[in-house]
Image 1 (tube, rainbow, N blue to C red):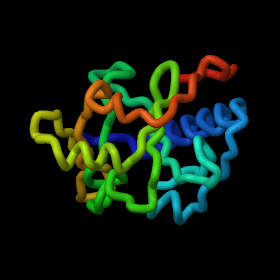
Image 2 (tube, rainbow, N blue to C red):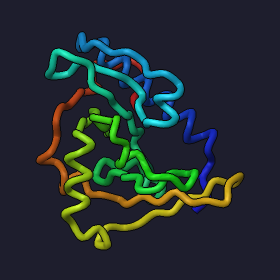
Image 3 (cartoon, helix red, strand yellow):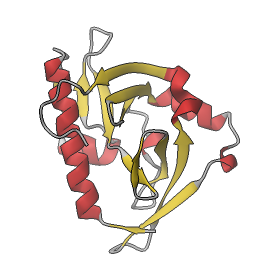
Image 4 (cartoon, rainbow, N blue to C red):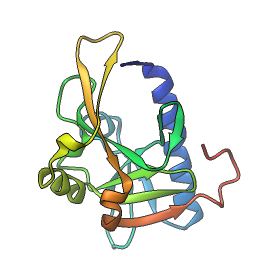
Length: 166
């Protein structure tokens, strides 16, 4: 499957801004990562949630499945667009913030990784995406939210954001 990098980047940037706005609304300390941390370590922000020190977060925008925004499936990146290990393997990354229609659900990356390592992931749908300007593919699995719901670390409700939340 080919996909539009610029469009996905714009959607990702907008989702990150929504996450930042929510953190500020809920008085959660947040600071932006450096460009290198974002690019090489998959870290978008550092936040103080449930602890006294900052923890790293990668924000994931809600995805479309069969053309519709989907709250039931999360894309878990095993191989990135450049053919390297996906964000699930980033040792410097602590938390994944998945956008849903009404909230952001936050999970510890290591909990999801451990789950994947202890599960037969061949039962999940695999998605390969190709950037039009590269000869490599990213590889993701579509992981049902219900399979990892018990790992949820934190939740940020969107109802207080005044701008468009999708």
